[in-house]
Length: 554
Image (cartoon, rainbow, N blue to C red; front, side, top):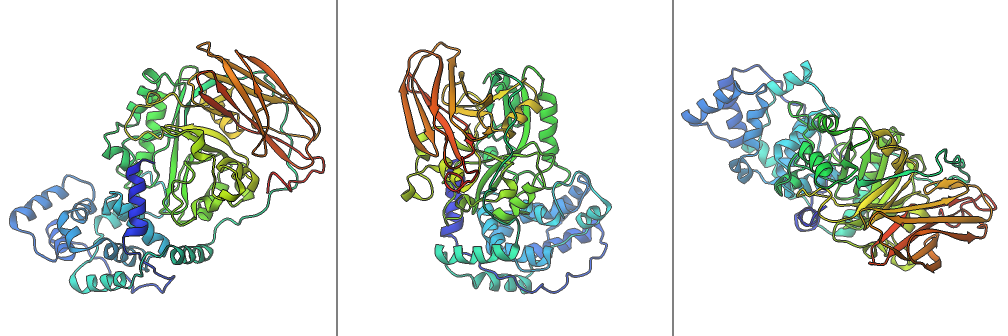
């Protein structure tokens, strides 16, 4: 995320008064809805939201507008986003009133914090309403039930009710981080979700590769378009333009769009999830350019993660906690998921729960961003536990995850493929959607600062990302560069510790002999070119002689 969103998150989580609502009793039942004429609807809406009667010209314009849109709720949305309503009803009171009326209950602490963050970041109040009205994501068409709701759904913020909502907001304590964290963890336990655990004692060994060498394709899987609010505010074009630019100007082999799922419109008449798929279908050409649709789960409390390869999506509005997101992810074994920009959203020491391990989604969690626009690998050298001397990738793998390094441009202003030369290079059989996704799912990728650096790390007939059996190993590192740039250093790491550093020149293949590890271990290389550009492979995991994971995977 850019500085805009980081500042918004800090403001919402620290500077604003914080709402601490317990899991409380449901509010009174909603008032029965009655059919109204368009004019009666406009009059009632102004009374309930603005506490006044519209003027004649205003009434006529609003009534005429109702005939131009399919649902009356669009006119209500206009008033919810109007400056007059925002001046009359502050953010905390609005959120309290929204949940009490739409969900018939008081909001949870997670919901209040996320709602304040979203509003501070510029999300329209009407979009939050849209997220709460829908039963689940995504809604692809207007059902009769939704049509009735949208046609006669009226919120009420008249003085008597507003006073109650303000009373709820006035009871909020100050933003003490320790107290907030404790309450959030307590509430997260009550909300449930996937359970953490320990790494399995054994894993199935990866089969030998049926291809002695893969093709290398360059692109990345973290990019935004105007579908994301923060990118829209910075002038980013849409998904069709993004794919066209990446292919014809950025000269990428593939691009994965990952707009924030919280910003993907939840109103069915917009359906931007389908818009993204239409852009993919129009832009993808096997053998020439691969277009992928994904999403970024952007939780200001628990961190951001990208997901690719799924037909649907979720967001923080529905998966409030990381455990709930993992629960959704566990139901999607086809997903390829990455931890994004670690350390960026650790305000309350909850980001990714500091890589707490959830065995049911280890298969889907395949990567972690260690190379982002304007940032070097060194930014991620220190992880969450500074005393252990490990960076984020190694802390994750020590916890039991199996992740490799990916690069991201995280575009919010366009320039897909041109704002820098960073790439995520994937080793795939062919340039097709399924082959690129297969490489991401099996961790056959590396991050690179050079746009056409070629790297392979192999052992026992298997490429990077593999899990192999115990014994002494000979790792083969093969390096090349389409521009003829030479290499100067190859560093081999085992479990996050440098075990061999070799000065090299030119390009070619080099062998590294490693004695059989006593416990499960993982190995990766960081290579440096003569011009100081670097690239990091995904690891290869080696089973220990005892078949346990007591060291590297805990």
